Length: 257
Image 1 (cartoon, rainbow, N blue to C red):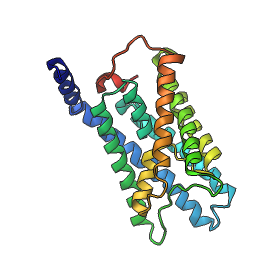
Image 2 (cartoon, helix red, strand yellow):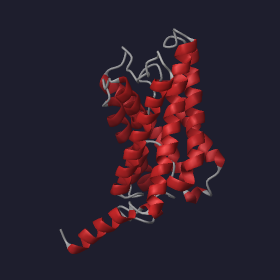
Image 3 (cartoon, helix red, strand yellow):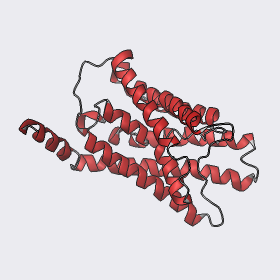
Image 4 (cartoon, one colour):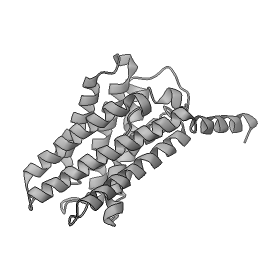
């Protein structure tokens, strides 16, 4: 390894442990915590009010509304601080595309996963007598099919995130954040009965960790990570190619792309 490469890696790591960076990690923790709390909490509320919630289409609508409104809300509070990822798949795509550095992406993942576990733990502690629901695959679906479905929907979600945050389209407005939320809600409606419509590895991981069941967990990681990466690379290199080609940039530049 050359001296210049060592200096570059050291610089990137240093950028990931600055005061500004830790503000971003805290913002990701807070936003992911409340997103998971609202989404998983709404599912538990549906099961409390409707014992047959799994077979009741009303619960599907409730879940979609919760996804849309919760994501829009947490993006609004975190967007200017951390970029409002709230999703390891979004962070992964941003890292692969060079919008944030790899060390920063890893810290984002840690914040998101811990926040998800903590949110589900809070629900388990305060709602006595109910199990924290986990994402499950329908009998009509195979693991591969569910992963493809989750990946396709994550592609749509991440592509929308890229479009909403692109400064070439004009300054970010609340409409862009709302559109991202609506995309998540529509995806939950489409995939809810089949794969759960997670599109967020952190949300799936947190509920599985607290429930003590990691069955089919790979579905909610492999599909979304691949779908998100394809969406980011397609947007950056084919649909709206950027003039800046820095392979991996620091947090000060990446989070405002």
